[in-house]
Image (cartoon, rainbow, N blue to C red; front, side):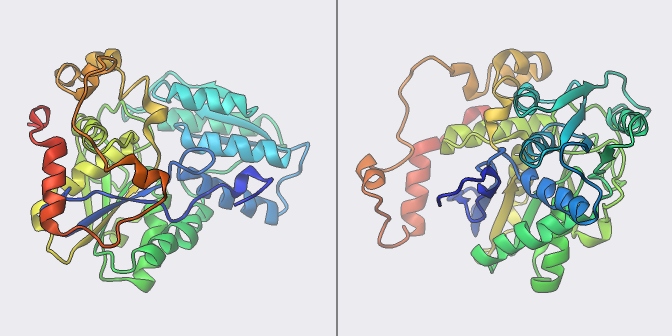
Length: 371
């Protein structure tokens, strides 16, 4: 690809094969972190801004978009607004990733941060209250409202769902971390039309009430879960809703880094743990896809930082492989000869089950910190 527009830099068909992650079937991660702004939220942002432009509600050089975001959507909107000539104000809370805050500012966005929690113990309602005040203060300000915006759903019906069906047409189980539910609802719409037999699993952190299930509680990880149901959320369109403890999501994020060399975001940790919990239910013919919304570069000073772990999950701080960061200790190889990479070669045939199992055991058997 050669392009002069950074908004063209989204990659629909990047999947990571988690060989032998489960005892039966095949498990793939759809990696969205290689999009230009580092997450799946680029799609939502593009569709929502395009909708406002088509409705004649945005004017370059005059309009300012205001949105509540934990970070990833804010980064995407900041870039789009810079490219299209709009102002941008992002309303965030203390759980936002510092990397995302800096990226929004680098693109020219303005940050407004709330510090008071709402009645549910989260920040969403106080963020939305501030959004409304900011929009009411200036007629040239427009609120996208990702929580109720149908274009947020359309983005993932037309792009994410179709991307998966094109690359993995026989997917049997699909796991998606949920917050605004735009990704999940868009996927549910398209899969309901084209692959109704696929089981759709919405993954939530404990303490989230995105679909009106579970009990509200303290959450520290951004980008997944909500403290009140979004307007576009519809529990009837998913087959199951799974709640994952943040502690388990953090452990899974470290596990996949140690065993596969893949640095993933915390919502991916939730998805991976949900898949692992269901591992015994899969058949040899199962094809499992998990959506990885972003990569771990946005969480280096949180999920992958020992001081942050010690403050938030002290029981993990000394047990995770992250505690060895910087030690320079050699470990078993995680891939084949580099000449295969340099030459751009791929295996002539897929390795059989016995070879795959032996290779994985050589890399990560045992993993005592996961016990």
